[in-house]
Image: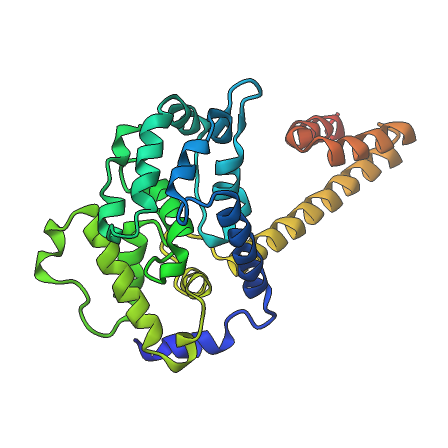
Length: 286
């Protein structure tokens, strides 16, 4: 790996926040596997009911995908729209056949990704949802990485490896073949460092996202800085707003009660702040 990888790894997650999140999610994964024991008992796939996918009466996500998308979110983020769940529910027989492939110990990782997921609209393309399901049911194999975007995997390998990682025939590989190849290379990279070799794979992938964010990704540290900047900006705007109110009050253009009302409206109605400020500035010029 590139020399700076270990340097970044040494200072990564010093307060242990991310490691705690990952460990908590891994404990929940055990509960998920017990709740849906499809790997050890493939026939139990048939117990999956339509309401486990999507509750059409209430419009809520079913328990199965509530686990996949929310409880196990630290093991890989997904952006899913409810229409996808509706389609899976309507084609539950097809989805069950796909689950049989997912938990088949004789199938390779490439075969599992290349299963006919596109038969259900929203599960094809780069198959992010399919890869998350595959990861959750194949975690113990140690062969799957919780990065579901092909372009992200390519980006990380191009960033952290010193040598060229991709073979000549990479462009002709299927989606599943690429995912298996990229997963193998990333696992090799993790194991090549004494420091990261002992890291759990999800933790290592979180390290990559935080330390080498793809162009469209905002890291946790960046998100905290942006939130802090936003809070400071709101505080600055509120101070200026109160200066304007106090000036209008001194001139007798608004009453004390109106000053309190405007101040309260500012706090409770962020969408009205611009209009209120413009109205008061107009009043100031009269």
